[in-house]
Length: 457
Image 1 (cartoon, helix red, strand yellow):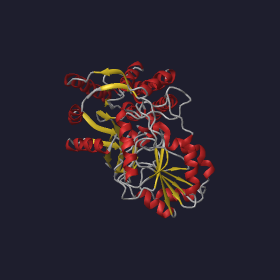
Image 2 (tube, rainbow, N blue to C red):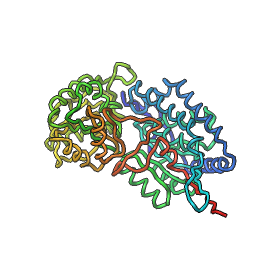
Image 3 (spheres, rainbow, N blue to C red):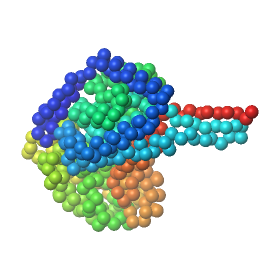
Image 4 (cartoon, helix red, strand yellow):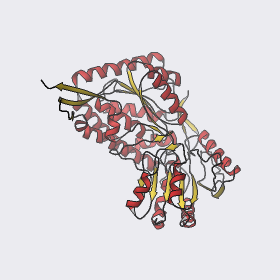
């Protein structure tokens, strides 16, 4: 596996890293395990909180540096990258702020005596993370586990090694002890061996269904806890009472943020027939305003895709859709540039027998469906193997919430696109995975909830 930064705007290879050896992995696992044992014995919670606060401080201090590393790794707009750095800093601060509260013993009522649960670390955590949010994906696992006392090792995507290495250097600069966090430029066979290692207590993955199934199988075979955040084909339901004027500013970001490479971005717009024509007109106008170009240029609003392979896959899926009856309302024109650009595209008339009906297109492509009413909208939204996120758009919020509750998904957002905040749980159902990250739910994902019971004497 070649770990290299290949700038998606030019396809120039900027840096290459050597794969890690088995001997080095052994050393790092032993360092992590030794540190876990030390933390279990000595506590040191205040020290870990201080490191997280310092991590947040450094990220904000050097925000341009960290943002540019991300942009060069995977093509994200520089301004979007700065937003990700800030979000990562806020997650570090959140878990430092909440650590004492989340680690408080939890009493359980019983007439037979006294009972409470203490939350305790379990050991080294293995994280397998993707390229689309190079720091945020790491931080939402690292921060809660680190402050709770679980060291972490990481296998990051091969196309964003600079970001992976920068995060390791960040933790060291902030005062993290040896073994607290280690980036591994490992191959998949080595990842499997790490998961199986008795010093590793759990594994989390954000990525594809295929990757998730593989990791879950290895984890299950070795009786290791796992959490998975996989793909999404999120529905954005537009109800009869929707205020369409409010959509004009909202629509571009819903699908084009991060060049459409967001698991929770709105991919299927399901619109009741009352608003369908007007909605489509607004969507086309919003897409026309997107400007592709240098992701470091603040005037650019549409970034290149992360790799030449990603571009090829998106174009193939668009063509597959068209070959099977889909209509191109806007876009699907070539962009003459050496970078990995795909023109923002809108597709309609996708029937259930179209091969892409239940596929996730990970790029700047919006699919629009017309439905008779909200019941049909919910039925179509649920006609998917995915269940990560989704949105409902309507003036009557109480009613919109009731509609959202009928959708089989892990997260629903009212009158907005996807939102990620440290205090809100993140995760899905169906083939979108299981388990939650962020919030208190993410904090406890890999902790032992240890019952202490004293019967009446």
